[in-house]
Amino acid sequence: MNSRRKIRWPRRRRRRRRRWLLVVVLVLLLLGGVESVPGVPGHAGAALSAQLLASDGGALVAKVNPFYRVPRNPCDRIESTYGVGNNLLKNSWLGFYASIWPSYQALNAFLLTSLLPGQARCMRDFEATLTAIDDNYWAHGLAGLPAAYDQGPAPLHFPGDLPRVDDSMWMGVSLMQAYDRTGSEPFLRRAEAVFVLARANWDPLRGGIYWEYHAPGATNLEKAVASNAPAAAVALGIYRATGNPMYLRWGEKIVRWLHSHLMDRRTGLYDDHVIDSRLPPVIGHAKYTYNQGIMVGVLAMLSTVSPGTYPLTDAVSLARRAMEYFRSHRSYRNPGFDLVWAQNLLWTAGLYHRASFTAEARASLRAAIRAEPKNPGSLLEFASGIGLRALFELPPKDYGLLAP
Image 1 (cartoon, rainbow, N blue to C red):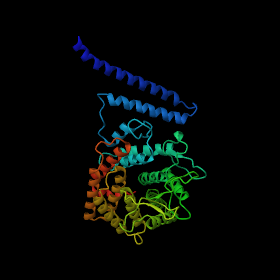
Image 2: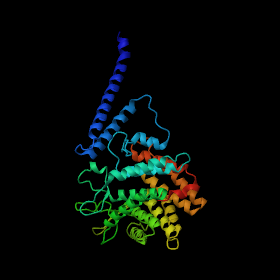
Image 3: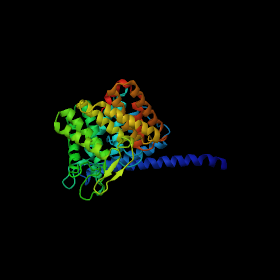
Image 4: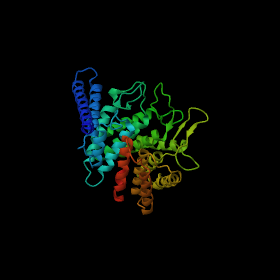
């Protein structure tokens, strides 16, 4: 009798757990059905919340479902683990909507994977996710400043959480990549709106674009590579698309400011940020992979629009200095940063057409992949890892497709 009880109790517990999960999912789906009805007060926010809750319920069931199989397609893996069902993504398999930086990395993973043979459908994931983020995260400006991408869906905005200017600039990079591949005018128009935000956050006294939305109440006065270099990339991308010389002038202006205020003369690399509202200025000296990467990309972009003034060798020289620094300082270990670095590095290699430099670039990519977390749990780490591996699989003849 006792032996039979020892066998049955675990089975009963498993059945109870599954019944409990089923009840949870049914309740969440019921809430979703009620709250998503148009006309219900707070409909937009309620509908988003209900979709998120239903997604979390499905994720719980998948965790205990013995028949669940993780998809093999990299893009499907991102969607099945972090997707909400409305083309938005979560920061983790169970949690809140992803903020812009991990969302940007997921967009990058979709885009880079779409370049591989047999993975063209990942481009649909890229466009659908980018459109959903644009529809839900784009928020009206504060205190007279232009609109920006919020930290989450705008209907669920947390008061007092000012947008990060760099987030909008990275989204601008994705928008221009989407425009280059689809020719869809709404992507270009939104990228132009993103650059309006960059200009509005330019310091008219000392130059440079603030990292945090510079509205009344802003407490972060940093001017970072991450808020300036991608803004230059957006400006140069719009210039290539429209021929409007204003964007070229702004791209050059931002690069000159970065060279004057954030280049470390000892190493020839770019420091992370400066706070120049006080004397002496406070400089963040960290040499992150993504800062050097986006600067390599911007210098390479300048070489494509004005090679006589901006030779491609400027980008190549910065890339080689960075690779040497990263080897000696063991800088690879942040997949999101490393993906920005590797993508811009390989694109530059595709422009330079030197086998030795391409080999150096691929060695740098391999080092970044080796430094990845072994068990990535967040969207940021998971998607960035997929992007890095897509870059590794991409043949060098296709590096020209990696333009920022």
